[in-house]
Length: 369
Image 1 (cartoon, rainbow, N blue to C red):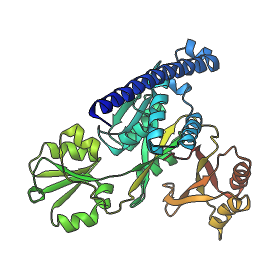
Image 2: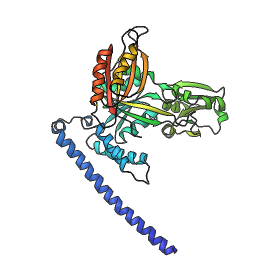
Image 3: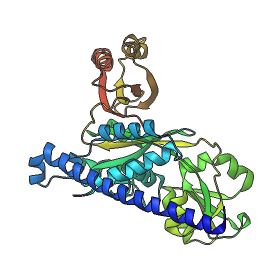
Image 4: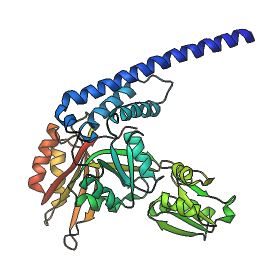
C-alpha cells in the first residue's frame, strides 16, 4: 500500500473509531438514565426522603452483570479489562445522586484503598481511617456505607484483627475482593547500598522475608500500621525506604528501587466488604460462618457433619481464641453457596443445634477476577 493509501486507511479507521465512540457515549448515557429509573421505580419513598445510595447498591446484581460480561467476551480485551470497564460504568451510574462512602485502612495509597477501587470503582468517596477497628466503627455508626478490610493473605495467612472484629460486630460480610499484591521497594535514594532502614506493614515484611535477607541483610526493618504510612515516613527520612505498592509510590513521590520483591509470584490478599445488610443470592456465592463447639469429644466433627450430609463444600476453616475464657475457641468457616440455597439452609438449621453458638457472618458473591 502506498503512503497516500496508508494515510487514507488510517483516516478511515479513525472516523470509524469516532463513530463508535459517539455510539458508546449515547448508550452509556441511556444506561445511566435507566439506572435512575430503576431507583425511582423500586424506592420512590426513599428518593423522597433523600436516603443514601446504599439503598440502591445491589452487589448480587452487579456480580451477575460482570459474569455476563465475561461470558460474552471474545477478545481482544482480557476478561480483567472487561470487568474493570463495566465496574466503572456501574460505579458512575450509581453515583449520579450521591457516591457511596467506603471506609478503608489508610492513609491514602494502601492496598486496602486499591481493593476499594477494584470492587466499587472510582465513583465512590473513599474514607481513609487509621485502623481496621475504625473501619468497623465508621460503618456501624453510619459515617460510611461500607468498609473494606483485609482478612487473609495467601502467603502469611489470616489478619487476626479483622477476625477479632467480626466476632464482636453486628455488621455482615457483603462481598469479597481478591487483590494480587505486588510489593516494591520504594525510596528517594539511587541505589540499594544507601538504604539504612525499611518501613512496612508486618505482613509485607513477612511476604518479602527471603528477598530482604538475600539483598539487604542487616538493614533495620520497622513494622508500621500500613504500607502507605511506611511510604510517608520514607519520603521524609534520609536513608529510609518502604515496601509498598504503585499507588503509594505515586501518592508520596517515591522512586521504585526494585519491583516485585515479594517471595511468591502469586501473592494475593483477600479483602471482605462489611456493611449493615446482607446481599441476596447472585448464582455463585460464598457464606461465612462463626461457630463455637461444645466441650465434648468429637465436637468439631459434629460441627462439620451437617455440611457433609447436605453436600455443602467447605473452603476454609480457621480457629481463634474466643476472648470469653481461656482455652475457649471459635471457628471461622467459609462454605460454598448462599444461606438462601436449600442445601445450605438445611445444613445451617442442623448446625444451630450441633453448635454451642452459630452465627452467619454473611452470604455474598464470590470474588470476580
